[in-house]
Length: 88
Image (cartoon, rainbow, N blue to C red):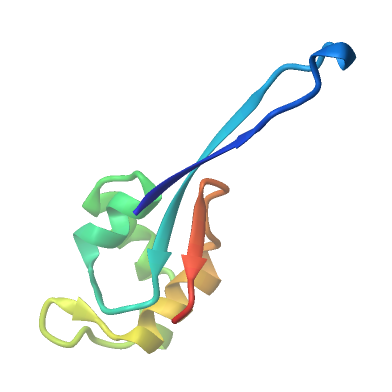
């Protein structure tokens, strides 16, 4: 889900209008390639990042990382500034 947030600023103050775009993600089960897309890197790079804490992460459930694993990944790797998390 992509969300565009625009901030309008008074023209008398001679400040420009800022536009920020955010990608909102939901905490759910994700495949490796889906997480790589969120971080805007290829799968090989993302896998390398995950290898740094693979013992703590544990094995995937089939092709998917569990919700607990996704939370750990988001905590360890920190979210890019353009990503916001939706908690249901």
